[in-house]
Length: 128
Image 1 (tube, rainbow, N blue to C red):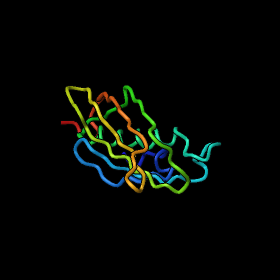
Image 2 (cartoon, rainbow, N blue to C red):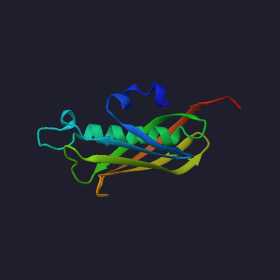
Image 3 (cartoon, rainbow, N blue to C red):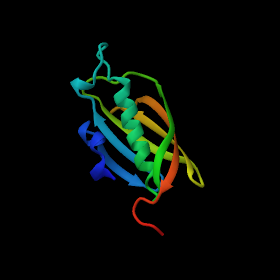
Image 4 (cartoon, rainbow, N blue to C red):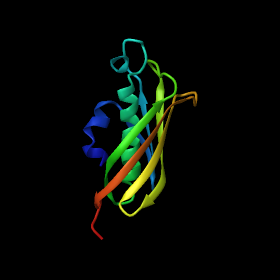
């Protein structure tokens, strides 16, 4: 999946870890990611969280897509900050999953909280 994820790679996201129902990704805030207030644009933070969510929900040999996602921005991120998105599965039943993603900066301060709902649409790696 990572090999074909041109969006995440193009933004400089780094996939650090993937496990059953979990994933961790990082992103360094570049000047092209800041808005008119000198803060990281929320769309980039959402994308980081959404990408971590995607790898977590696709980690169990189920091709999953987002059914819904929302985010709460808790504090600003700034130029040069290294953001880490840690996704964790909260519930999985049938074809539906629920995932929480915490985005924190290099000091551990929480920048945003994301919740995503997934829907399985097939197998990723092999058909059983």
